[in-house]
Length: 113
Image (cartoon, rainbow, N blue to C red; front, side, top):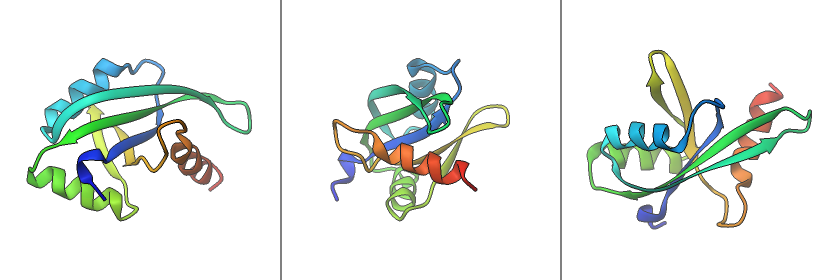
């Protein structure tokens, strides 16, 4: 896998979070250049409305970047603290360019537990 093309997925974000908030926090991590953030409005099976975010990164060679890439490509998540004790669970984005299905499947599995 070309890790320069590895993008990340936050399955669920608060309505008050915008692209600039996500870009700012990920820039603070110094893991690479944030090329683009997509925020997608979704509905689950129950009709609940929520947002998911997709972070497209040009990764650098830092130890933290390597750690994150290793962790998410092995099916694990990372937690990114963004406000006090608030955090995002972040996963690898396994979807193709036209569909953001991985976040759907992660969120649906978690919400059924």
